Image 1 (cartoon, rainbow, N blue to C red):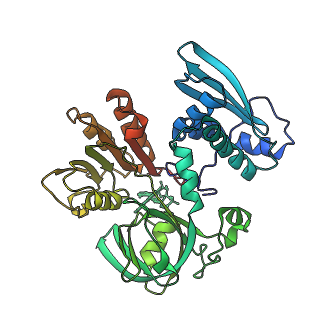
Image 2: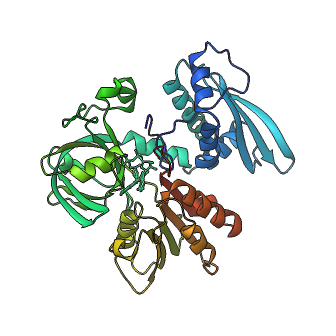
Image 3: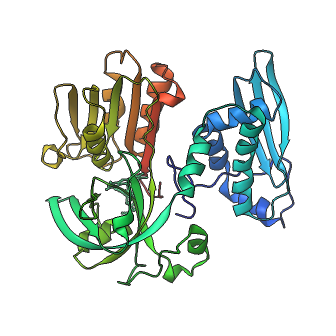
Length: 389
Ligand SMILES: Cc1cc2nc3c(=O)[nH]c(=O)nc-3n(C[C@H](O)[C@H](O)[C@H](O)COP(=O)(O)OP(=O)(O)OC[C@H]3O[C@@H](n4cnc5c(N)ncnc54)[C@H](O)[C@@H]3O)c2cc1C
């Protein structure tokens, strides 16, 4: 994980291969080429509303319906802006040419800030929310104070001490990046001054490992925070650490962040998760406005591995069991979503789970059920076959 810049795929930085064939000895162009089309996807999918603002305002197309970034280089972006008259190509330059990749991310986000200023419109798009969130992030130092096995593949780990008493969650799905000692070490190699730029420059053997984990419970009176960690073997460093965690172990927690943003007027929830997203589902159910109906689709290995979810008459949970199939290889969640009757009203669909499963559910609710972007937050929590989310 190099650069946690987004909730949907926190490790990816905005940026993309230069459309205009930048020279190969240009380090920014080389990095852009390496980051590949995934980065254009991030701009066009995760920041779709922000790119529309940029295309509409800075691209000079006030009637714009959509804007697709087709290229990025050190001087600016190429955008195809679509309005009722058709497609228009626009070149939007950065305020100044960028010198390095970190500056490129800032320049891309700067386009959104500039578009907002020029438009003088109220509101916030996804990139603006993310900028505000990143500005409030810190690194907390804490210790493990308790460990409990909820079942053989789920451990509850409780953190406290250090400066954790000053932590404050941001929303029901609040998550933090759990930073752990490098493999083979038992002491942390970072402190509260930690940054992802520092991480990128550290020698491999010194780099902390870890992953994002959801705050299942926060007890401000005693400054204790519980996370529920799926134990899926020793291949993953975070899972391996969870298996051997014991009171006294020191960790760092980078955050807090959130991806749960129900639109105003939302009158029902559809929550879709595998075991990694269920801690957030439980917290969302606990913290939702009283009486807000919720439909939950919950995938776990077997009946024995269900997680406790707060019950209420207006909450309906469908448990889906993999029954021997490997996690991340089934279509249980999207099949169950397809089988639901029309959602009605003004739903908000939130989900956390394996990347392909979340993509399949996103396609279904957006394309087949016609839900708008604001009504859907399906977050890739992990990727079957490797690679961090
Ligand atoms: C916003 C957010 C919140 C999250 N909250 C939680 C949470 O509360 N609890 C939780 O357990 N996880 C949570 N996750 C998921 C967790 O961060 C990932 O599962 C992470 O990849 C685990 O890191 P690792 O070092 O164990 O494995 P990695 O190094 O990432 O992967 C090693 C191997 O393990 C596989 N793998 C990774 N995760 C799983 C899994 N869950 N089951 C089976 N195989 C897996 C990978 O496919 C890969 O082959 C969250 C993720 C995000 C983005």
